Image (cartoon, rainbow, N blue to C red; front, top):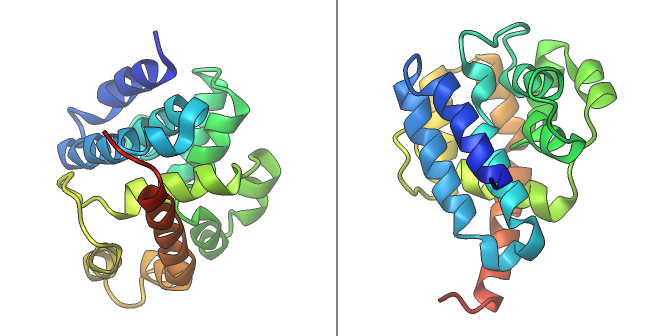
Length: 185
């Protein structure tokens, strides 16, 4: 069984029933990640696994801190015995450090989980931040606006996504540049 197949089952079990909209988003993120296989080569399975698992920390059964990247990564490390690279991708996905700082959890995040290499981090950010809550492709600028609108002015998620936006856009553009150089079948 591939790492991605294993991850898809975990995500399905944690998200499909309690959070169907989050499950739809997760499926879309995984499809976007699958499309990056020619860019990532041997790391494609790891990226797809991270795409399936990036939002499991929203599952009501996993919420401890209320910060989904940390709750999800802790579950993966402690219960599923996932590898450190996968846990690091989940913990740090889509500029999570900025939200961790807003929540007073930055120390725990950076002490417990090492960030992934830049290409994998950019690829997961690309997959996540170009996918709507319903699982459809979207331009990064529209996705960022949707998140800010959903949480509202002054919310810590809105503040952190605003701080993260330049880095998120750079990640998207980096992957788009790489995709243009790789022949897709």
